[in-house]
Image (tube, rainbow over all chains, first blue to last red; front, side):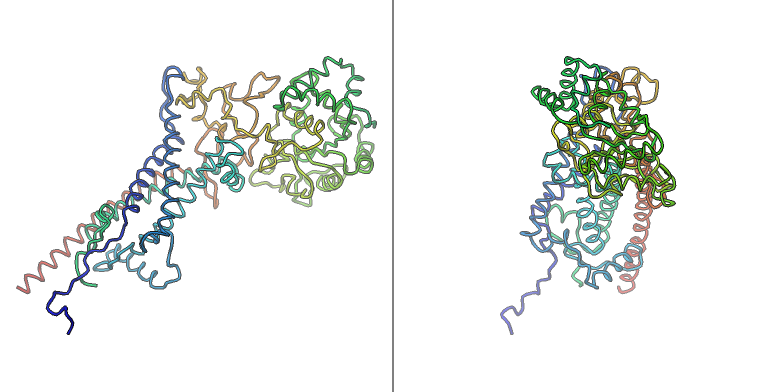
Length: 232
Length: 365
């Protein structure tokens, strides 16, 4: 008999998942995306004209400044997040890796979809992302984010000019896609994809927080995943 | 055709004074964005260098490039450049016709092998074995390939030669293609625009003759000095854009006050050209100054990029036409409704589950 006889078996009901830098990144990124989407829409479809002298206003200039500033925050945040995937815990790597070849991933994905379609009595427990969330995060935030950054900085390079580092790094995108108007158009489509994703993300986070067997929203604040039951 | 005398000699023979000649050199230097000292180098080059033969071919096109070219702002520019370049073949401008004209092509090709410049206005149609453009009884494509084989460099005049333009617009029945699709082994300078600005055309040629090299080109093969910035970057209405003052509809107060034409679909922000600096017709005006947005005529496939009057243009992929905003708002609305429905269903489902669990517990008790 071991020395632990008589001590109640400790059940794991909470796991530290999201480290502080990941949580800070999440909320900074959420703010950046909000600012980017609103200002981006207003760049495509500007507010009604202002009266008076042009020298009295700088509305479009300010909106564009906010867009570019938030774009830089998104880029720096993305690079930081990539760094943290290397040095952070195992869950910090989920954003950049997809277990594409693991069959279990796809069967669990189906299970999760069935849970959302009311075909399963309860969802499975996951310390990190559930397979459906995992897939969406990789496709929208990583792949989608990269597309938005590359097209965004390509458009930004048009004003920083030929020879600027933005032009050197991203200027090739414009002829590769077609012309400037095409890049604008796809960047604009990307905004709507992200808007729809954010709607789904917020809804599912709230719903899972209430209906699943684990905490969601508080986890992205405290970092701890709380499980509501001890069943596997 | 005599092509051995210098530009200066040719000009003096045309009755241009030395003063007029130096004025032209100064204006050209300024147009090219060169320091004042370069006016002397241009003058020296023109006084000492033999004229370079230029063959100017016409494919599928409307001759608007030639029309623009002969209307250079400075009264001398077109005359001077025409004599400078020793325009040996240009079926619009030359006196010769028929076999006599076509013979010049062969003569220049052999006499100046590897030393002449090929200027191409228009483009070749590849469909029906090139039958949509026949010159001297043969497809233009054959003429283009032959003349390009022995040239030093190719100038692609206008959007036709550079990108394809209207004849290559969807559905492109003749399969017209830009010349870089058929000429692969020669340097090609793209001078797009429908037409290009006259001063840009003369400027490009003057640069090549003076410095005996190609102007610095951007990724798409356009001279940086004229196509390095967008119309929007140098537009005189730009302060209204930055302020947020737009023309909302034709003939409104904003239109009268000269506000920014962005909301009217102006393509200035996506178009690389020199219109807002060099302007047209001796610097008189350019489209935006006349109250109409830029239509982006120097950009690739500008005919196929949706309406000239929308900024957020339609997307044409997989045979569908859609506007990003229209689809985006519809998608967001649909997803929003779906979320609401799903949330309601989830609530009902949960209440049922709770009731079931309660029932089981009661039964056990």
